[in-house]
Length: 375
Image (cartoon, rainbow, N blue to C red; front, side):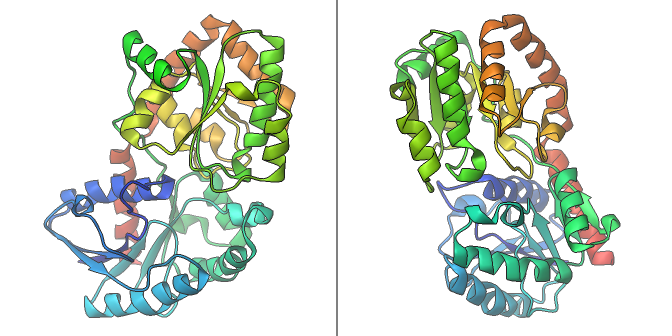
């Protein structure tokens, strides 16, 4: 078979959640299936690190897909030409975007529908593009893969798509996320938080991630529990809203909030493993990889009780209401004051995390590929 793959999010030094899914699953699938040919379609110059095996042919299709007009040109003109040239049997799109002009069978991986749930968080041109094209992508799909039962249900209900044609493939965690010893933890704290313990948030700084309420909750935690505990925020600062600005500037302990910027996995693994706890109280998630990564680091987790996060956390996390500042603050107080609770959560997480791995993800995604080809 010839399987063409949308690899536009394999960007060196800029691998985000969906890009990570693509990297990890494609690395495994291409090596485990040398009998098939894979056409990796990039939208700009690609690094050799993403050419995982000899059965991959990398192709650059123009233009670089950086805003709605260029997205349209890339997917509706560039992609069809590549699919026709290489006689592709299937188009696999790990970011969910398809080409409506191509007759080739298509399998999108749809990670979430946050742009329908929270359209106000999306810039107007981008929102219009998503709202016009994604229903059409779903209608075009020969089959759909998604990373949680929550998102599967969302797709089925929102678009009346047949549930038996949607496969849940979940996510995994990078091998960079492991427990570390106390000496290494102290080195990380010395580097980022002047040697102090810290609660950690990891993710794109975006309204959906609920950083404003996390900052407010941290302030209440510090008011209730005098301590030297910091809040370390790791992620690219793409959006900074008035609500975030108000929360930060009115925070009594804002000098103890450290913005560390974006980090790669080799840096992020030790940062996660050194945290007192991960606080991930997003309003909406299709999966929630930082929750799983923290479990692999033996770090207890506070996360939202909404959307897909209970699927990932199981009984191994503390749940909080993302809209309730007191709920988040109370969870932070519990984690700080009850060491027995931390030990219990870590023990449960060691069992819960075994349900997820990139090897399992790749296997399930390949099963979805085979089902799509047979349909």
